[in-house]
Length: 227
Image (cartoon, rainbow, N blue to C red; front, side, top):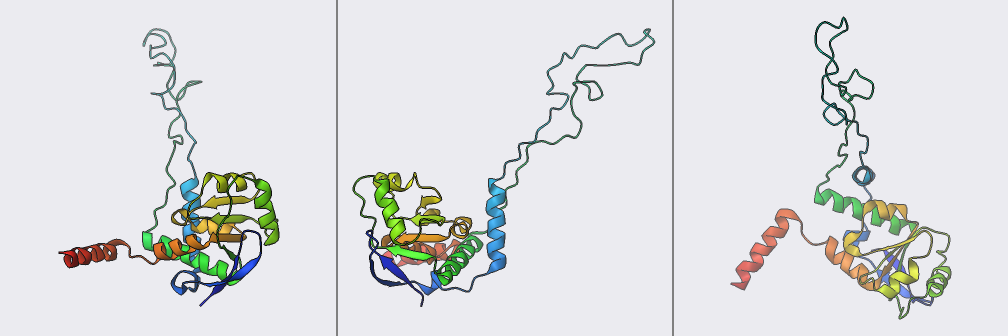
């Protein structure tokens, strides 16, 4: 079973914590991690390319001149595609690049990423963030004490109070999240993951609970026993 160091907010080491092997001790599945990262990046992509069709161009629909008797080729409205300033034929329009990934695959990819970070020694646990007033100086001192000032740091807290958020929000390459919002791409992007003890417990409970039909069956069994 994997263990990680536990620190107090003043930077002193207070011991070690054993992690749940079903969450932090798995064999990383690189193919699944790759698929989850691609899905995340694709979902962030916006298809902004757009062209105007002849029905969207701001031109009069009046016929330019009469059909016959001018000696010129017959013409319709100025919004026709072959006219200057007219509509575009078969041009690009905003598209959706979103990729869906099943819940079980998303969970497995996240657990693989967490397990790889534990193997790298990039996971740190803090007893609690003892911050009663927003002070960036205290946050910097803490990161310096655990040698994380020059790393990309993701902080996972169970209860992001305004004091904690405001203490870390002005620091470069430091961002904060909660256990239920943790994503595979965020885990891989960070060089160091700092968890509070409570957030570790919440994450382990959250990621070992049943999904889909298994969760439905558990609820059915609980309902039968209550009756």
